[in-house]
Length: 282
Image 1 (cartoon, rainbow, N blue to C red):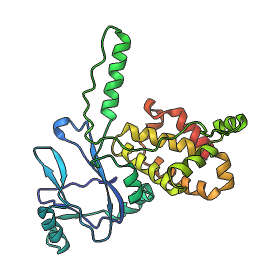
Image 2 (image 1 turned 90 degrees about the horizontal axis):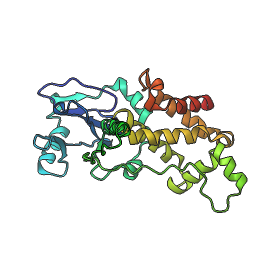
Image 3 (image 1 turned 135 degrees about the horizontal axis):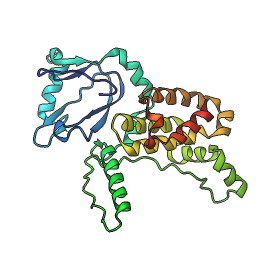
Image 4 (image 1 turned 90 degrees about the vertical axis):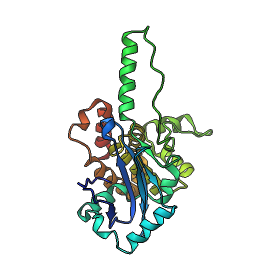
């Protein structure tokens, strides 16, 4: 759960004292050598109890909140009958997680979550596809394999991040400027897709980062990358509205703290992209 790991025993029945806000739960199967992760978000509110049951046949957690069984668990939890079997959320990690998820609201989750709420890692699929493409390049007669990957988690409804200014009456000068200064593109995006609320943009940026760093979603990485580039190169906006930039810096800083040491020299991470962003931002 989140960026914490708990060592549990046979009597474990859940987690208590979960801080208010968005949280990400994820798991993988030993039978699949932990190649794929499945995850989902919850938004914890005071007094709420969330009930999931492990289904041995489906090898997945099932939502039983609205069933009689779920109701019995909920009542037992609220009456403290299960308290002995619940592990406490490590409070010393709460602020760190808050830094990574503070802008993820129920509205952000409603906008982005796939049908069924499950988010499936795509790192292994990405690597396998890359290897197949290389094999086809070496042997043109070899046909690529048909897609066998079944996306249990479905599609995350990320916002399309434009790379060019979409404006019918834009002058050539404005279009050229937008290629260097992303302010006009960012303003247009915030107005059209986020109801003029920059905090919704930050929420999606945090959602994308979490699905990437914890859920191993390549789509999450690509979306986070696009959003960081857009913010980092919105030069005019940082001058006109420095408060927006001052909100962005702590978000990016907390995210950069989560990367492994070799991330910036790894090919998939786009070394030039992050270096150029950091040079401009800091």
